[in-house]
Length: 198
Image (cartoon, rainbow, N blue to C red; front, top):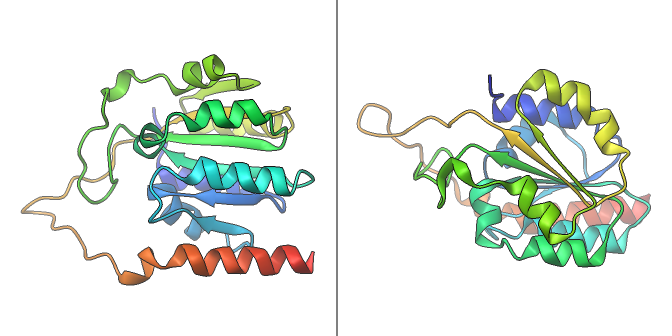
């Protein structure tokens, strides 16, 4: 049985221990509920940019663990970033891909290009990542996460996430507040402040 986005975020947040965290799409909302850490930032509206931001943080602060909580559709928009990350070999880089097979979770709900057949773990290994895992259930995530977090990166973890709610006539889509498209800058400033104080 697949896990929900919020469940996966809660487990990861419980192990973050001072990590720099970059979120996007549905994980952005899930992680916001699970963690109040000042070193968490979203990459919205830079869809597809989470891994690039995470790489920059990993290279700038090699003493810090960097966790990227990416979406499957987001990563497909910048699939070449796997090769860029692998080429830089950031040992502190853990890349979680929330594979729910939907674009814009909670908004348009269109299927991702390639559908469920896209193998992100295999793509990461083929690109040169040091390791990759597929995690199907919440129990597996709880069991495997401590060991994954101490692996030498870059490491990709493909998480099987249940399909998001579909919106339509009987379930209208809620309006997205403007602040969701402005939060990246504010959160980046908060992370910089937290790092300056550390």
